[in-house]
Length: 302
Image (cartoon, rainbow, N blue to C red):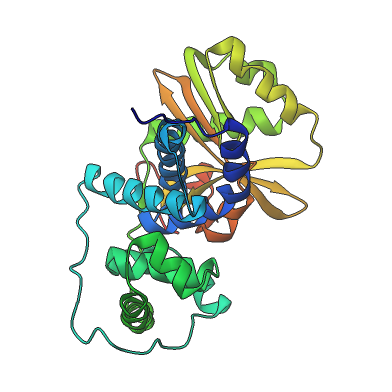
């Protein structure tokens, strides 16, 4: 009878610690959202943790983890009803075009990547963004090196063509209730009235300090505000992050963090804080907006 020797949990913890920033970068770009990217990372780590004890041999734990992340990202897109562009398998044997520069990657943001096929997107992220080799990418994605080269060539060519034609996203429209919630939270936070902020918490509130931990219930979430009360020079501004309403946290005149708040009947039901995800700030399209000056029920021009 085959005996399976569980792999040490310490090895898994070390793998996660080393890979997490790169996994997040990969997942966020695969699904086109810094917010959903963290959800995909969590899904990836859960699936990997469940499978880890039963694996007897693993030649490349890193490649194994990225394969799980790729599949988790595609599953998330399917659940959201988003379809992938069709793969183009013609002219497979081609040389790659020049790598995307850091300037191009910054200017492209996340949206143009979603116009590429899943293989093109994954190859571009792994090579041009994360710096893996062709051989490593082939192992991660179960592709041949020529197929990786072809995906890179087609993806880079298409992305550069798309960059000049993408339209600006439609203006975000907030309801009067949403605008009031944002304005109230910002006013209390900036006044450092954290007792009043805590009074807004629902009994079943959930806190996701992204990349660190999750807490449930008022008792578990209330200490979170004590941490912010000890930080000097911080203030919040209503804003949009990848087109979603949220809060931008400024320190010394620069965006240092962003936070999403969910409400139910005037109570806070969920807080998603990206304080410990600095890599997200480099990818997100984060823009401030002035809630108080908005026309009633009007569109926010961003």
